[in-house]
Image 1 (cartoon, rainbow, N blue to C red):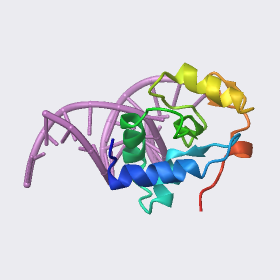
Image 2: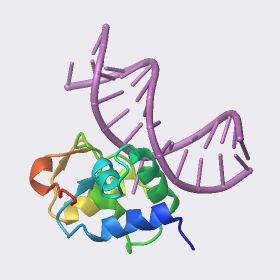
Image 3: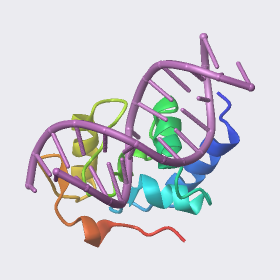
Image 4: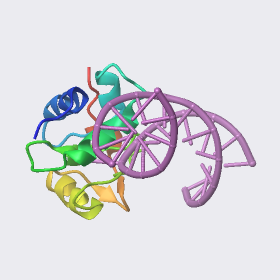
Length: 103
DNA sequence: GTCGTGACTAGCC
DNA sequence: CGGCTAGCCACGA
């Protein structure tokens, strides 16, 4: 399925995130030269939520919360914990430590 | 071309 | 700390 140019860029940013690290919608938006398009970023991911080819579960909110996930935030939390990321009540514990700053 | 929607964010109370 | 509001962007109908 073909993605929009914007969506493709979002996936590209996603691939830059190594295991055990996470980033925020805002960082991706900035990386795409559109710091205020964080909404569009989430929108793009939601519409392309298929398969682990894109680690969308490594993208969280700027306040450290999980945010959402097409397969359910519970699933997202499980995947994150699998990456050694500690989560408590939909919130990342060591958020600042695993946060990956793009560009 | 316009409207509604959403995995968001920052500000204010 | 928690809840509400307004602003922002891309996409589909």
